[in-house]
Length: 396
Image 1 (cartoon, rainbow, N blue to C red):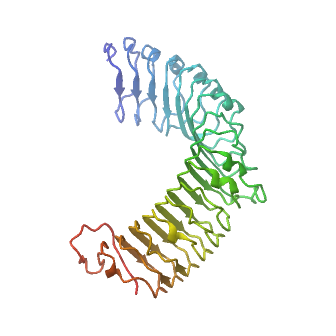
Image 2 (image 1 turned 90 degrees about the horizontal axis):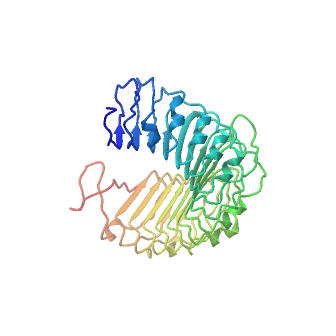
Image 3 (image 1 turned 120 degrees about the vertical axis):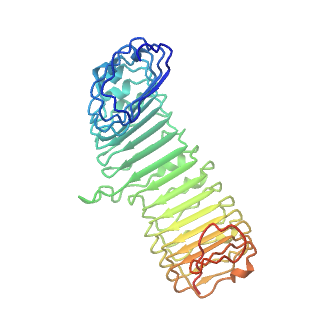
């Protein structure tokens, strides 16, 4: 194979190859993939290394990089996902052209060599590492950063170039401050309790800086440490999707008007959603496992709502009048044990899915919905000739 001088892409995934020889004449090789080569034990990237730009090493048996990796100075994409390497080797500091680096468990340490990768645009690191090198802030082209480790206790200042940020940990001592990341468009922040000890963030200030990230389009917050949200959240005019999970919020602040998706899960202290009437473009509303939620306010004005899903809301008694929601196509109710009444529904409704709502006494007659698609799961007999997309089980 070494004589294939014009070869640009070599995919050896899932083969029984045991050795990579010295392919000195492969001067045009750009992509080399060795995914799941479980028998591979010897590497010699001499020759092809000078020009290869994409290297994928995804073998779970691989515990260290071959020494010849230091010759990959032209490498652009390095994929180490699912390997068993505990640390990024220092030789990677010579990969000045590297743009994408992906590492996964059992990564125990992120080397300071990261800060030497001047052209890095995407960094993905999953493992048990505790510290993030301070010089990560020097990566002025970094656009996507994923950091996931239960041991992360703090995050240093990150480069302002970031567009996508995901941070997951259970050991944060103070809420991070990302107020300098004014170019962020996607933020996923997961800070959970460490069950081995008391909550270290109890009483910590809220993430006030989120309201300053004017470019945000997607925001997911998952943390019992977050007890309130900045009133400036309403100013995030670009925000389209908002997910709140396990936050200790008692109510929602006023939300940005351009939201198209709102998901609230396991916010067990939340008693009310507050006024949602300003969400004129909201098309999907999902509320799950909010034990104390007693009311969902002012959804009757959500003129673009298409899907309403309410699951495991044991304190919810009734819904507002849904008649005027002219674009609503799906209502899914499950585990709303105290729900007594549904006040009207639009003619546009196609799916009415009600399960485990044993107290429900009043709801619109399904026959009044011209577009309703119904399939009785007991008899498997359809009530129309339409193509049915989902079971419907109405408890009366």
